[in-house]
Image (tube, rainbow, N blue to C red; front, side):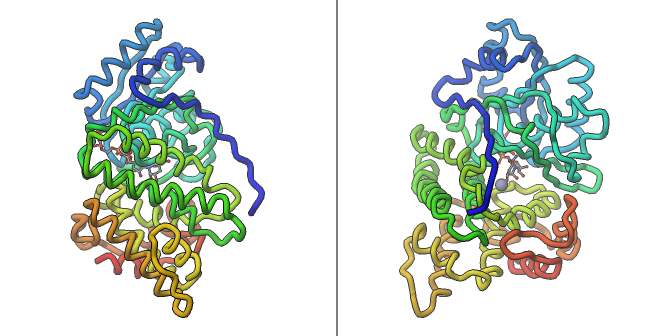
Length: 391
Ligand code: NZQ
Ligand code: ZN
């Protein structure tokens, strides 16, 4: 195991009706004037936004609202939010929604205390300062409610890029699984896929002797398989929604990723797809991951065989471990298909892509030096070959 520092100070309030505590929580973390940031309107339709504003009013906390963060959130709205925060002396940003609203809120919170262009952070500048951020999560997926990350798409050129920094960790996150009962099956499945991806990205490591985090990842994957199926089959099942919600946080706040090298090739390759085609991040990952894993299989057959046996229940073939490894990837692929995820480019709705351009952007975007992936460094030609496997 490698040395590490881990500091994840988010306060979690989990369970039914927990959003009613939002006023007290904002107060506890020093907010006096709040920007409430949300997405395309699901939180308005569900009545959640009204409950949130009432809870703030009950605590005499002033607020402004800014909706419109779309899936694959755009830079234009971030600039608008920053301007609003500066003009109105906002001192707390509250995201109500999914990863897109939260990531957009994080970008606004950083930009509001920065004199330069917030996009600097998405070109590699570390995020050291931001207004305090709180979240009320409505979909189990991205893990942004506990992560130090944010992903934004710049409209000019449609570049999708990530930024990171401890200042991006929310000071509190309210997780009420009942808020996710209204999710369409497709969004639930996209979320399950993304959570599994966050675990696989960490599992694919070159660090030896990481049994504790291996077992945590395997346990979370096993739980996601059973609870994910239950939530898809019975969308009103609060208990499976609750398990998914905590799994999503655990999968990405990096408690499972400490002390080990990580991969992230699938995410970097997927981000070009969702930038180019505006597809859901989870759906893109469903197509990308089996291709990446198959391409990288020979790098460490035993790691793929281990997850095949421990998570997917495959029989170990000691004479031909690569058969076990492949069976594990296929079992994962079939699981994704069974929950309604696309299996190739066509089903993702992508017109024939400019593969060379996407491969180039994946390898050189975000200040990367010509490669993606910490498990196997993949150059442009490798990434292009992987995109072709998805056709
Ligand atoms: O926008 P609204 O109207 O709220 O509708 C959303 C959106 O259409 C809808 N939705 C959310 N909660 C709902 C609901 N509909 C009905 N009932 C509810 N309770 O679902 C759709 C998807 O929402 P979105 O926020 O886009 O989903 P998700 O949480 O998957 O976020 C995706 C974004 O997160 C980024 C992705 O790249 C993508 O841009 N990621 C962020 C990460 C991070 N910050 O740590 C890590 C991830 O790997 C990921 O890259
Ligand atoms: Zn993800």
